[in-house]
Each structure stands twice: as C-alpha cells, then as structure tokens.
Length: 337
Image (tube, rainbow, N blue to C red):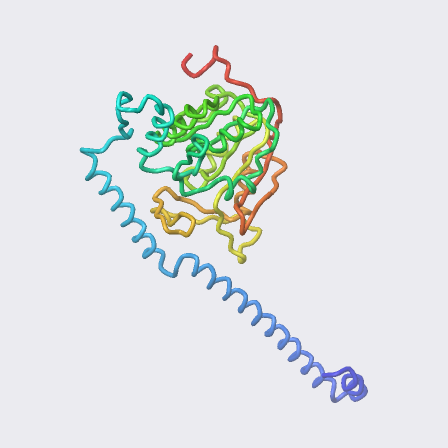
C-alpha cells in the first residue's frame, strides 16, 4: 500500500482494521521473501558441500582403497628380488678420463624416481617431474639473503631448497625426510656439487631442540597434507623454530565456508601430480586457508601472513612466539646422554 492511500485511510475509522491487516500481510510477504532467499542460499551451500564429497564418498574411498591395495600387492610381489638402494656399476668399469662425471650420471640414471628436477652437475639435471625453479621458488618466500642463518628444510626430498638456502649464505642447513631414498638422492647431489648441507632420515614428529638444535628459518614445504597427525607436527616444529617459518601446502577452499577453519580427510589417499594424474596413498588431509592459519596460530606462531595463494602455490609466512638466534644442540645433553 502506498503512502497516499495510507494517509487517506487513517481519516476513516472503519478502514483502520483493514489497514492494519494489509500492513500485516505486507510484513508477512517481506519475511516470506527473505526466508525464500535464505532457503535458496542454504540449498546452494548444501549442494556445494554434497559435491565436495561426490554425493557418495564410499565410492571414492573404495576406489582409492583399491589403488592403494594394488600398489601394496605390487610391492610385495616384487619383494623377493627388489632392493632399497639401486645397485651401481663397479667403479673399475668406468672410463678413467670421465670417471667423475660418468659416476655421477650413473647414480642419477639408476634412481627409479626423482621428485625434484635439480641440477646435479652443470648441464646435468635429474629427471624430476616437479621443477622448483619455475613452479615454486618465485612464490615460496625464500629470503634472498640468509647470511649466518641456521635453516631447517622439512621434507627436503632431493634437497633443492636446502642447497638454495646454502647458496644464499646460510651458515648451516639441515634437511630431514622420512624416506630413505630421498636422503640417498640428496647425498648424490651434495657429493657431486661438494655442498655442505646435510640430510638426516628423521620424521617431523621427532623434532626437538636437543636433537638438532633450533633454527632461524624453518622451511615446511609440501608436507602438511601427508601427515596423519598434523597438529602434533606443528607443535614439534614450533619447538625448534626460534625465527621464521615458511609454510606451504595444498588447500581446498570452499566459498561456502570462507573464513571458517575447515578440513577434509582422505582415508585412502588421493590423486596428485600436476594434472591430478598420479595416485598418492600418502595424502591424508586437505585444509582451507582459514584452517591453516588457525592451526599455526593455535601452536603459537605469530605475524601470520599469506604471501601466495590461488592460482599460485599457497604459502604462509609466520614467526616464532619468541624470536632468538638458532643454535646447534648442546652435545653434553644430547638424546644419547
């Protein structure tokens, strides 16, 4: 009802009940429209959430479980003839004139898998499917000058970021990885290039100051979504980080839960690779950006800042709650004492 009709109706008492009834109906219509809009929004959110779990998650889980079982069966079937460390040719078979280069090339070629494309010798690159020079280094926030810093590279793989940190002036670089073959490939490049960075076979859950000391910079790239116990891992990292943290992970953001900490669990692995063409049985969690920030804040990291995000890699920079120089462990109170 427009304002003119309302003003006229107020002069005739017998019309006032009708006026109130019309106003009540208008109010109900407005509320109904608002309820309809809310219902439409909630329905859209529900559809999005249902699409995330592919309507029937048991189908996806069963397929991932089958892939995982197939991989395990293949490993077991080859176990009686397989080796952990690929065999090399005897050094006596190498040509003396080109022995060093040929020896390094032979070690690179004999490895069945390389994750990182890395320059092992000038002009000789490993056949890794991930090229950190173009895909990661420009976005991962590694400082140009690391002079005098102790750096920890968690999940170091073949050592690209460890060696890059050393090149940028770090006084000591320690990498850790839970895969023996990663440490082996790390050492191939270290020996070939005569570098000082060291890699140890260690799980992130084993980090504590008395084992490796504390660090001015911790690199935590590409590991978080592989962890069954992510929050505990962040607690262990916080215990050894007395400077800055650079954190990178794959995220799964949903606009319907934007700003709310949210994570999705993969019980039997997930597809991975540049084009989701590889099955990875070691992917357990994917988080949205708010969840990553919340978990880092929960364990005590401060000054949290997203420095790269979609469509580029998702990276957070943070600082220890108590900044002080990184130091090696006290050998008089080391774990074996």
